Length: 286
Length: 280
Image 1 (cartoon, rainbow over the protein chains, first blue to last red):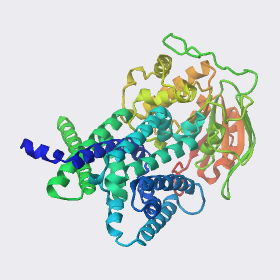
Image 2 (image 1 turned 60 degrees about the vertical axis):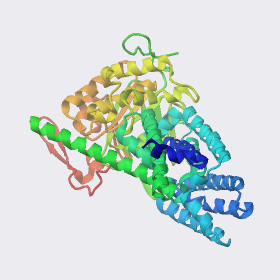
Image 3 (image 1 turned 30 degrees about the vertical axis):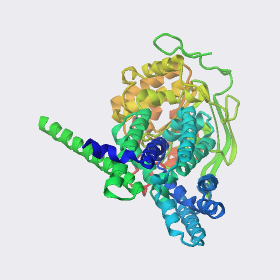
Image 4 (image 1 turned 135 degrees about the horizontal axis):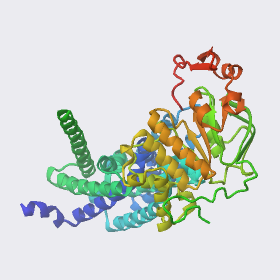
């Protein structure tokens, strides 16, 4: 039995994957708290897709090396996040429609660029669905540094981010730089997505951002608690997902996301059940 | 200089500004939204410590006016001056939103919401100090919510929700509080609680402007009233402003008036406004 639990960790790549999954999961969970509270799930999804052209250019120029890929993705993410942020201010077309058009177009451009290379399907699959088992020590170092910086910014602007998320009008009457803080948060989400790309890939990225945070939302009553619970849920999803992936031989990114989804469904069912029981007790008293 | 002393209740030193100048001066204010005139050529002044009711039908521009005064929206024309200054850059104005505009399931407790009022004073890179928490607790005590600081905001009643936002305005050290339809949906007793708090605010020279529908409450409880429907139809004492000529201009066919021995009976008829009840 114990062997069953320990066996996967005899492989160095599995240990790296585990560390990566926990780091990325926790980072996404903390930033994702704002994504959930501000209703930015669609923005997050769009942003993840919109960076594919950046990834593609890095891929074409760097001949498959990881380092340039990362920086190109970062550039694409920051440009896209600011671009998507600016779209909302233009007239006539609804914001979500405009975002949808741009992100689908960017995504198609990315696929078009990558498909110009022979035998591209394997690499494309890694970009789309992640490759957490291929994570290297230097990848982990990069994740730690950027993750640390993002969390530092979240701590520094904690109360400001809370006010702009809860009540933007209050933020304006307090004369906070609301627009600047909005953009800063978008850039944080963008960097988080790029840092996390290797774990779950573009297509499943939004799940890492919102599922643990949404689960925590059901379980918590204060923001810091929500963040901590979200981190714990994301880490558990990472561990469970890797076991899942190891023993059932399924794609690791999908396994991690499925684990998170199951935890969400479990908690969600639980909250509905407790509500029903409470109501029943209440009606019995009456 | 703090307006809060270490006694149990707020001891004001309001106003910090010159008492001689009006709190608020609105001059020739217009606001266009696309091709729609939301406000046209509004001019009025509000004095220090006054309680002013802004009355008008739905869509009259009450919320828009408040948002311009708070500095959230920029007027298309005209000017707003708070103690002689532009609203931007001033943090002594608080806007209390309509209760249905607030996300009550947000994971914060009562003290967190009130502390948000301090964020402007705190500035970046600073965490709330002991003094800030003291101000939060005194503000909560002022609105008689001292025992509720750890309560989740989703568990509050309508009147309590309204009061914690007043506490937030106090923590912000606001001298002009704009309240957007605070009485809507509150029962009579709860409305009385709010009026009692407004009474205490007046003693502290806090100026309060309240957007509302109820003409009767406006004429009983406020120093002066403004009748608004895109234009400023009247400002002054209730009996001067709420006269049949003005009311029919403001409400058109939505108002029925009966002249009796005791005075004019007014019925507001809002049954058929074609969905204008949504307060966007």
